[in-house]
Length: 245
Image (tube, rainbow, N blue to C red; front, side, top):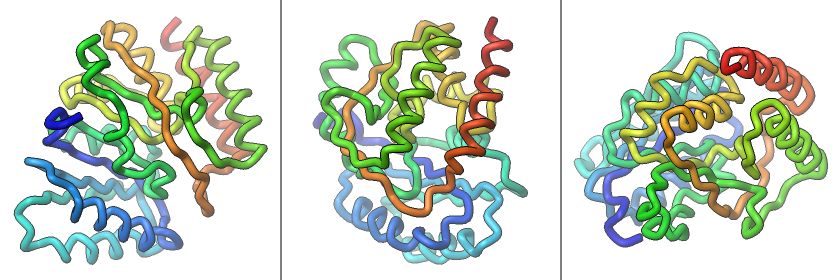
């Protein structure tokens, strides 16, 4: 992957992460130290946190104020709008030639995209790469309930949209910047189901998406309420289905 991705923006949507933010920031700091990008931008989008997360991020960024090789952007939503809304806001502000989105818990290591044979797929006109926990080559540690719900959700998506993806909900995704901006500009869904709308929009523009294997480990204190958010996600999927009929 040498020299393919030398200009990168990383977007972290986050909400009330005070319990685990410091550990994640240490990993981000390590990534920055080891990176050799011509341009690297880190974008945090605080989705209306009220637990001090914003102040911790502000303090973290201040450590790098004399480092001209790394750009930071800290955005804050006036209230909790949702993951899709936050990513859309981040993508709009991204300046890198490539955009990586990641959950702040870093269930997938930030460096993982370097394991992907991007040369091969870019030659085949793939410019969007979805990390997939259900890819045959992925290594995943997750609870049984998440495993079961993942299968259920995948079948629902196939039934409603005829979308044949192993996994749409993994937060680790890599986009060529111009394609990301084109798709997220049209995005309407604000929540967890925004990934499905991105796929449908990509299909309408004939933009190819490739699922890629990841090493994924479940982290504690997830903001996803398995039962309530599953209901909300199903409701939002129906709304998207009606929109794209």
